[in-house]
Length: 422
Image (cartoon, rainbow, N blue to C red; front, side):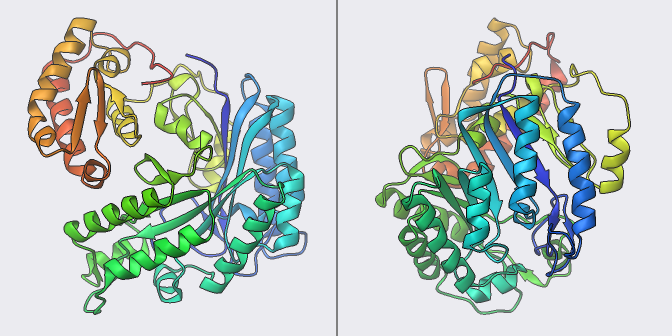
């Protein structure tokens, strides 16, 4: 497998934890920032020192083609701090002249001058965490910014893109938002259509539309356990996803991954690395790295990450990305997976056994094919758009159930390395 050419850097700090968030984050308060003298600046500086140490001690590799700074709220860092991290990557690996370098921005955490600073530091793509244009929805999600903040941030994105300072940018939205139990909402379809129309009007060349999931330990997770939160029905969630696909397709966006839509030439090169199963470097608290297909997760706390940094370097020949995970991420993509090849190269089956297993699974999934949710053309397996992608959980549950039983009955006899593309 080729050496990684992508790197993810995790910036865990944020102002506050959103009600749905279970990421490895460190809330510092609404007045926090990385500049000297701001709340939490010492904590941020200490963490960045560890992060740069980890980058410097990493195994070497070829120049990076994509870099992604995620969080958390990376825009708590100053442009100078972002530039220092990019310099550390440049010194260790090199960064291609045409590399895609993405920074996540929260609408309430930057202004136009700060944006210019990030662009001058080397950022050329922005992921803007808007989530909604509606103030009531933003408040219900625990977001810090307002609809007006988002509109202002979009204006700055349009200026940066139009002036050539920014190569691309993405807007995040959340559909199928839960509501407090007993709350009368109604009109969800039309309300969501309005959100989509505003997103299209923003001119964002890339849209990430996520269906919110409830995670244990989050505010939403606890409210749901106490019966205080109402989730959209499966039928409503499917209708919303179908509406999303139709509206965005009509506006010229290609649906290239289950949650991702892009104008031509604006698909996220970095995210496609994850979905293709190719390797990547991961740095920072809670980050996962998979160089050469071998998975390694960093501790999710600052104390644990600091202690982990003091341990001897581990052998990169650890466990590979498992078959079930490669299947899940592969089927998120528009192009799907080559099932027999996946069973052979990742699950470790012999070629004849892999073909037989793929045929067995195809027979089991025939009802989904007949419903138009799954397409099998030659060796290529794909979820249909939008029906199959909207109901992907049902198809994937059946596949994983089959895999669990097949693995228990006949464990793989080999463990060949995963291919860079499936």
